[in-house]
Image (tube, rainbow, N blue to C red):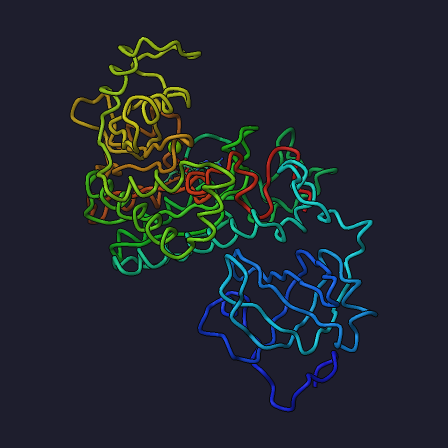
Length: 475
Ligand code: 4AD
Ligand code: MG
């Protein structure tokens, strides 16, 4: 028994998704579908058309509700946008354009009405800024439904790709004591009473804190990931990472999802191939498995997305050294806000010039100056550059950052001293170089950056369900 009363027949028709109902093969079946009303139109002939969506696919199903339904006048004709219903009915071939099927209702049960005066999504065409203020309702819009499905497809591809390549899925800690990127922009985790900090003289006494020491939310699972790569060979982590930098840009989040593969015996060129393979796999799967959603993005968000993704599938990513990139930028004659000089980090305007104007495709830049990259990247023989690699794409800029790791203990220790890191804090990390050290490499792919690129959405706050940015953790 359920609380919503009996269906019209004794044999329970199957509850199926609207995605399945929309397929021509379902014609003739009696089904139960459930979802939210997108529109209701009453025809003069004494029946109504209800467009229903349940999130299983982009398209709606058209339900035909005839006046003979017992609750036609009392309930069906009062259905508003956003109301939730269960419909039992027969799937028929649709005479309408753009849809293979429709459902002739035998029974409509109303779960809940959405008050037309108050429901914020009653009207279409809200700005993305406004929708961020109703992050709990935006999954009911076309755009956010499409993003949710594409995001799911991307995550599934990531797992499939690494599983097929023989990588083990590894869970690295969210709470950590080490700062991987050395940027110092970490969220502290504590149970100390912040209004009455226990001090030991002038200093906070961390012996009274939960972990007996300062600890933080992780910025990256890489360092812990390396310990497993140097034991079981190939691993990947996939989880949330946290950065407390005060970056209010359309490309930065304080909490974002990162996938980080790490492979023993890989050098930087193996690492580049792995990154290219992963990105191509993700793009191919999205085009294949989410064609309706991708069609929507190309029609309504950015008309270049399909062409761009298809073009990437057919081409090899370019490998360009940082030094070559600087030479190209210097010769470009372009006026940049930030000056170009060997030794300084590339700004997003430089990255965009390279990918959008000069190469017009994804580029893997490698061998960056040692002074602008973290301690763990392998020093090159020139002693000026390290084996870093960034994958840059048009419009978004960096979507992957990685490197071959420094596997020589003495060089690693020199680099740590250079960056004022205390080797005692990293004793377990340096141990990997003490006992059976091996060359190895890995990278981090920002899931939301990839989603920006795939969908053409302009703001990273719109490709994660509940964005965390400076001043905003409302939902
Ligand atoms: O380049 P990043 O900082 O690299 C690392 O964290 C390395 N430990 C990864 C590794 O080698 N295992 O970050 C990797 C990627 C970036 O390329 C970008 O796509 C994404 O993570 N990312 C962000 N995405 C959204 N908001 C932010 N604040 C981000 N910071 C980095
Ligand atoms: Mg980076």
